[in-house]
Length: 301
Image 1 (cartoon, rainbow, N blue to C red):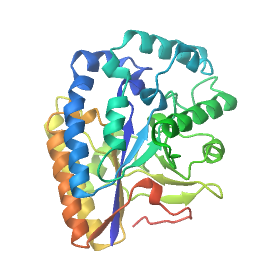
Image 2: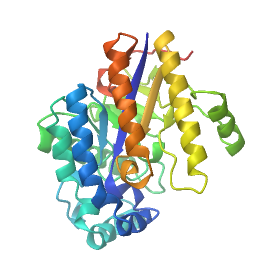
Image 3: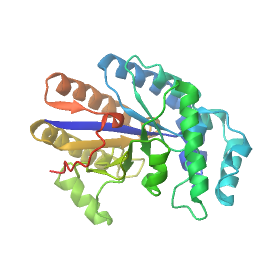
Image 4: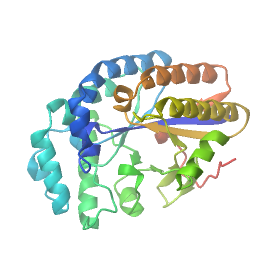
């Protein structure tokens, strides 16, 4: 019997500070329209008794002040302060969304996506600054839930300083999938099947990592209909493998993708219902990240 995990990079516009894409999404109503979708989604998770991992940006669930970003490199501090001042509240303040997750009838795995969503390899982002950002991220979750987060997702899937992540109390972190770098190679993976099985390994005595399998979204590109067909083909193949072997599939996406990408909410809803049916039939296990064992475990098929 295989396993399926789903983690969500829960960030609103904080994840797009560096690129400025939050402006286009805000103008298109992506963050505003996410609110009713999250109501439906958390209600469904409660009904189906499914637990996902919500890797949450700490600033999104706090009431941050400009001084809270003084630890960041100059360029990132400026972007964070400008974003906070210039964006609509629904773009940077996700406390209402977080409450839906925290109060879900089925307990969810509340993880962290750092406090500021500053990528760890960013120039001049010192170890001391990363440590401070992690401490703020943990405090943000604890202040809202009285729970210490165990699951961690690196901003933009760019890892670094795993020892600091471990020292901050995290027990499992998601890494980028083992996948080809070229567009042709990525296309071949999509055509061939489900993509890579997740691979777990121990990094320290207390921290394990797991590679993701694939990002479940097809974006707003012109070829989005083809991308959708290929993504759902990968998904169906992965579920078949998981139901007949020890294949482990780790899917991730951003909640705002459900608002931005045509048909994604419908397809993701169908996926959750399928997972619940397969789980109830005893053909797969559903594992949020916080339930992973802290042991080296190669479950690549």
